[in-house]
Length: 454
Ligand code: GLN
Image 1 (cartoon, helix red, strand yellow):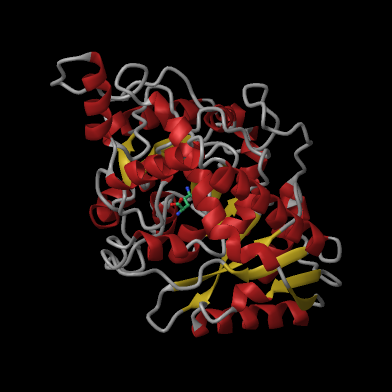
Image 2 (tube, rainbow, N blue to C red):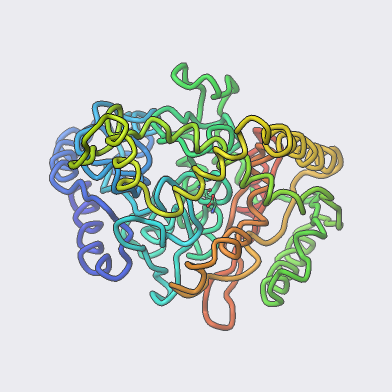
């Protein structure tokens, strides 16, 4: 099969289904077809890691010459970025073909894609349901067969939760594993870019391409990148699995618990052992996360003022008025809510009570994980307490929307890697996700466990 045929196939499928799925915000069709023809001419480069493979990129990852909006009206005129994010550079070196930019909640704030300021992506299994968020477009595009690979970003679950809802494989790497250079920042101490794919093997393959130290990102770690595909041995004999009791509490739907227990049974049959453990501070994770991520967001989003970044208002009399109106017009409601919450938590007089306290609790949460990992190889549980919900069901209730991330957020706070893989369906035919969490920089063991189950 030629690259041209592969790329054709991708756009054909997009033409057929994206009216309903709405996974893409911008297509790169003209450039992708030129690139495909070029690659077909020089088949000599076939050794390249991702030669000719179509890929979709979440719209908060900067792509040179290709519109990048982060799902926000504020950036709807950012048509022609001058540089590529490091991950995009790496994709280009590996000779994949960028098909387009994927839908997301505005600035990655959300769990359903309904905060996209353009249109909400839908769940391909049933378009009355949300695909999850914020990387809803990344998961939906792969699930709908529009692209075989995509990139998402995960600050509090934004890769794993949509992967679970859409029945695909999504990994949040260890903090520092993948460069954040060119990722439009939401919460810099939590954000990570990661791969979304149909299979574990594809996922390992894609992580090999995008991982590694980057001098342009001082938080990227100078740790060697293993050949993740080599850890897919199928052998989990003697693997020690920890199952946190907090992850199977009353809040988790019975059919999800059942699916997870069935998966654990399968691991037993494969020679692994599992035991119940406790992550006692995980009950504070949600409030800790929303304080810290909003604080960081309020600082990161200060640059969108209509001068340095973002579309400027057309009707302002004075300079201050111009800043104010540009921001009022450019940001959506959820983004404003987070900026206000974060600004409050960081303001003098409240800093010690909120921000500093949240940082301290974050350390306790991280210690919980470290303690468990002294005795176990991986932690397993559900990715989400429920399967996908209906479009519109939670949109007016930010707190229940936030509660959805309860099982994914502790992983970001601890900085450890986590994957979601499909593990069955609910009665309504919606996918269920199994979450596998590993030690810092031990994505290899996660992949080994995930692959053995698949
Ligand atoms: N849903 C969470 C939030 O709204 C997580 C988002 C993310 O991981 N980017 O903050």
